Amino acid sequence: MGLGDVSLACAFALVAALADRGVRHACLSPGSRSTPLALALARTDRIKTYVHLDERSAAFFALGIAKASDAAVAFACTSGTATAEYLPAIVEASQSRTPIVALTADRPPRLRGTGANQTIDQTDLYGRYARAYLEPPLPATGADATAWRDTGLRAIEAALGTPAGPVHVNCPFDEPLVPDGEQIATSPPPAEETEPTERGIEEDAARESLKSFLATYAGRRGVIALGPLPAPRTLSLLSLGALLGWPVLAEPLSGLRLDAGRAGRALAAGQLLVGDPEWLDRHRPDVVLQVGAAPTTRATQALVGGSSLVVLDRMHLDPDPERAAERRIMVDPELFAATAWDAHADDRPAAPDGWLEAWSHADLLARASVDRTLDPWVEPFEGRVARDLAAFLPHGAVLCIGSSSPVRDLDTFMAPRRPPRVWTARDLLRVVGNRGASGIDGFVSTALGVAVAAAGPTYALMGDLTFVYDAGALLWSKPDEIDLVVVVLANGGGELFSLLPQRDLPELRELFVTPHRVDLAALCVAAGVGHERVTRSDELLPAVQRAARGGGIRVVEVTVDPERGRDRRAEVRAAVAGALTDR
Image 1 (spheres, rainbow, N blue to C red):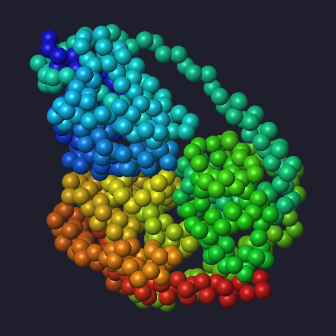
Image 2: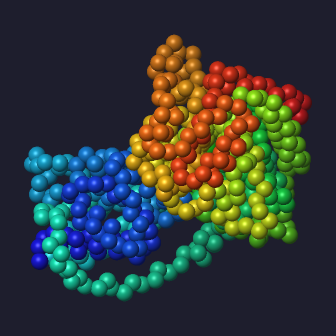
Image 3: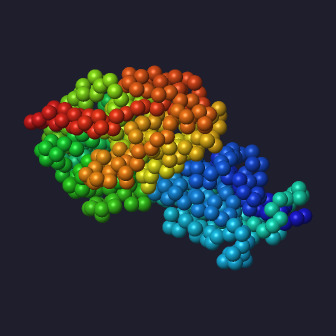
């Protein structure tokens, strides 16, 4: 019985605990020190393991699976700088409260600080971004497997806690790392007790919070702003707007950009309404109920900052970065909204006269002016691509939306979708993005992870810099085994900066836009993925449909003129302003 067998037994105990707690996917990067972890993951039937050369890509791939599946995902690597590659994905997971477990192999503790090969100080490497740092004992005998199992259970408990997030398990192994093949007998896990439910406590808190909220704000002119949220289970948050007589401004990442008829309707042109200074001056709300994370766009941020703010959120680390809220309600938002309907379905609170009607009428006018403006344009425009793609995707699909301009264009131009007559959460279009830290790094890997999670037909919309930045994910993917349609807006670089104050700097293109010369078609050929270029607006959806039918990973490159795109944004704003005159 060798030390390699003991190390494998301990790794098996850790991995078995993760599987017992619902982990079904793991990512692995090659390395020597992680041999026990690699063998344990590969030999555990309950966990499907994906191998990635690049640790950074592996972590974002795992992040995508976790976001799409709403379950914890593990990923493992060798010691040294490989562990540092996990940091960007861990930051995003921390900010977006996504449960992931980083298993980093390490040298024995006695070698830390000695200059030993491939050894860095991995203790608490991810700092406050990890919900917990755990380190089981250096394997010495089969009895140590009990502590390793306990570490796995504690890791999942921390990852799925409130708020959910990443956990770092640092796994020390001594040589030899390869087992001799002798199985180590370990003690069976102890019987586990069922935790008492906290549902009753949450319901009591929701009722008390609702009572106080209505006493203060019912009858006032308000707006509900829905930020990034988990996949909706009900339409209660939309219906809350109808109950209060308040319009609902739903970001696509809320999953509730819907027109559900009597159950409630999100604004169809909300970003353009709140982005029109003259109209907003005439219809500024007294109070904004922000549900979930801080808003994505500057227009909604300004709306939130210019009114009394109430934050309804239980999970986000910092939904009020400006510390502007006069009240924070820390209960589950859907439970809060459902409690409101249960308590007041037959006895509705007072609603401000004509307030919701004024917003709804203006919204219809603004939406019509947007569509009339976009429809005749032959050359592709980022806003129309976002609008058309969101409307085209089938029920139950997942849209991975890139940071920078795409997520903002989707928020501005996406029309509310009608849910099926009978539906569950899986039947709605789900929009997934890395909006915790709002970075562009690792986004292709994230989309690939979403695609393997079996959450539904998967599509992605991103800019060309985002695509090129993480092109390595394509090079090491298996294009015949993953179905993903990637729509790339080829506008020549980081055009978002041309819409920000940096646009007036003489160094704009050199330091901020950073145009590239990458031939995306050649890149796709090198990676073995499909590619089609689109140069007309009416070519987009047929190309997307062909890509989806073809299967595998396929890229639809949409050529966009950035100069004309800036002019067209101004045309849209002018059309909306004209439609809203005197409204």
